[in-house]
Amino acid sequence: MRQTKSFVLTGLAILAVMAMGPVSAELKNLETAIEAARITLTEAGGGRLEIEVSTCELCETREFDVRNETRFIHEGQELNVQRFPRGRAVEGTVIYDNESGELTKVLW
Image (cartoon, rainbow, N blue to C red):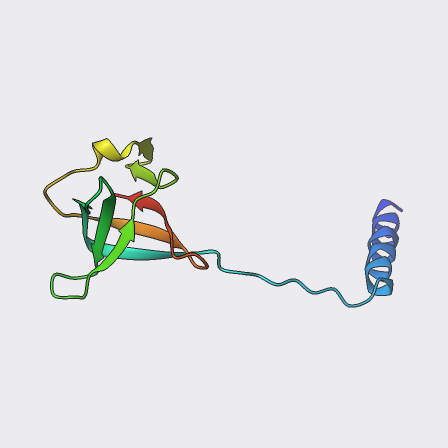
């Protein structure tokens, strides 16, 4: 009896959704990640900080401005930008917003 009741309720729920008409969902990829062989923090005039990213030693470098909203995460712990190694490149991942191109996270 309990299985029949459950089956009927499930069937009614499906019919209700079908009666509402076609349902669609649009999935958007909001951020993109770059696995980087080299992530370097540099000062870029006027007190601005930049992250330079390269996927290999001979590959082209991509640059991102560091903003107040940029999160720095080391081994799962969020740290401030001052804790990021300076003067040497590290391996890690950078994540940026697809629409704005702004750097959102640096993980190493």
